[in-house]
Length: 318
Image 1 (tube, rainbow, N blue to C red):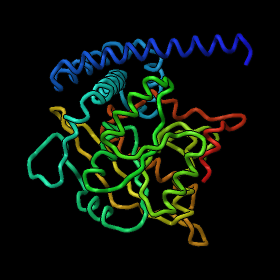
Image 2 (image 1 turned 135 degrees about the horizontal axis):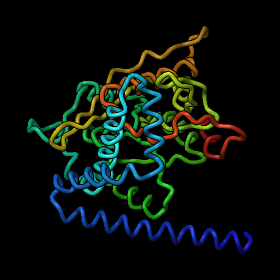
Image 3 (image 1 turned 135 degrees about the vertical axis):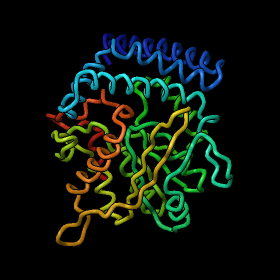
């Protein structure tokens, strides 16, 4: 590697380290507060400072396109709610062991309530693989956490943050409560296919931007969607279950596990990859419309890819 490139890489890593130390300090300070006060503070802080970032303009633009019937005041309110949700989500990594307290063996009312408990029980008892999916809505970490509480062995694919120091912290936090995790990088699709072939359950997020994927629509706009889940469903013909999380007042949560999707099929009876990808988008859109302030609108979800596919994207073919 040329000297200039090595210096640039070292400077980048140094910058990541400084940012990570600031994040660790913030997490430590939040831990000094009671959980409810810490989450309220994170909500106010994110609402105050989120609009100063360029991502706010992306969010507002996406919201205007998704909800042309809404006024500017309504759009700004949804964007503010989004930042509040993001602040709470970040702070909740500090309190995962205290907040996400669902116990299927207890009748006590905690912070988490479950919709579809019978479905959780049934999937956990079935001796065959399943695919569960969710979107970046509410606290989306609830699915693997509550699945583990039901005895559902689930390997969840996730995208690590670009900052390796923050990624390491979050990975340790997640692993302590969520079970097996699989980073979304080259080779991940092959690993997921192997797990399903062995009869294991996998979980994934399906609402991210994906360059050179399947052309679909989302909120009426053209976007590209990862073909990974539809291809896995086609190859293994396993059941696919949607699950989503929403926030409730009082720092409470509701996780809903819906019944399996009736996946569209082609003339040969195989899962239709393109139509299934659209079904995933339609499912996530339905959830978001219930409470749009709980989704990450600052994603450049509708950017269309050009040129060659990146190595990580190419790995989406199982």
